[in-house]
Image 1 (cartoon, rainbow, N blue to C red):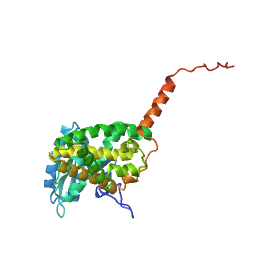
Image 2: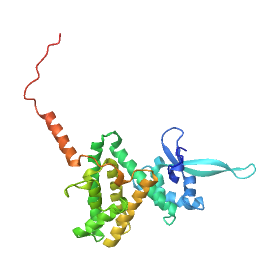
Image 3: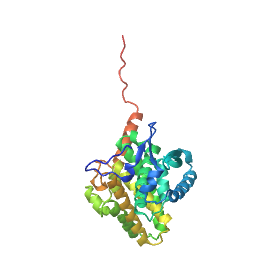
Image 4: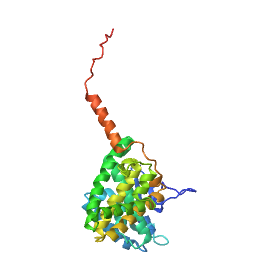
Length: 297
């Protein structure tokens, strides 16, 4: 087990049962430990969630064997008898699918859904884009572009839910920000970042970590509106607030920095892009005077 609770530091219960493989190939969770933590009284009840998770894994195009590793171990069944029991070593993605197919009426299952959804999405972004190897400015450009795409999808879902007028959309987005930024509306965040012009968008002055949190808020609200078939703007606003708050709670449980406390970059996304374009043009422009040739001797 590679996560421990230290004095003064919060450790998620899901971190506490995380294991490191003996081969050093990565992390995993024991399904037997997970079902107890999630509040299931019997292993057989949790097995149904595992089977549904396997189906979801296959439908997502991922090999089941890559994420659900069957383990059979012997346990004592009496004075000298032993019996075999099944367990699974689950990847983070497998845990995400299992809790998403779990009994959401159990508070700890709802907590698990938030935890594994946030962690899985963050890992997906890192894996797909290999952001860890990029400089901060390039991370910001990539993530800002992603946020724009996901906001377009979210806007479409909100419109289907009854958010139509411009004022309705402004209110809808405020609710999401209020959930994520501890009751701060867009104008409040704008002022907190010290942005003078109304033309300066707050998302253009977010660092990569803050952009990542907002991407998760947008994608999960989009999914919730469609999944719950939300049909009124009041319900849409409430859903956006709830998702924003869940993302905030996930960050808090991971001992992360709250979005409103993250530093504001000095350059906007547009400034970074202009600077990069100038550098490209300067590299392409031929020199006015050739460098003098020197003789090697």
